[in-house]
Image 1 (cartoon, rainbow, N blue to C red):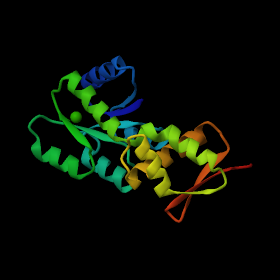
Image 2: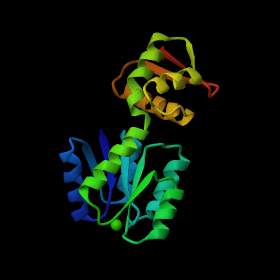
Image 3: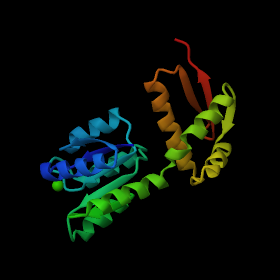
Image 4: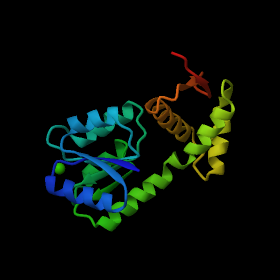
Length: 195
Ligand code: CA
């Protein structure tokens, strides 16, 4: 699991990195919204830990633009203690959960695990197998949703879209010469790409 952290407090960044690495997870940590945005564009993350009080840009705006761009990475917002308005704004802007500072490391990692359980990562091998077995043929989204339900994942079309977009990135990163096309928004087609 790979986590992206955007948090301007160096002290908190250090503590968070330590807590997350103790769990055996990978973490990339950045101080500013600007650096975080670049990392999000270029990398692939299972979860974003986002401080809402950043110096260069409002964390809420980062969140909004992320969701507007269709990014479905789970977001755990870090908020100031007692900042109820900030929590509400964060959830409304697309955060999946929040954690008020100061927090206990045990609660942090438990919330991360809960968010990951709710995201469709576990279906990835099922999706790849299904698309490969049907290579060159169109596979309906409904059929993928059915496969996901067998893995115990939510049967939402968002889950399918998220998993397909992650799988695309992986195929690209590993130079597999395989592409997944979206057909009329309701089906997918995996095929070999020749250069
Ligand atoms: Ca801050």
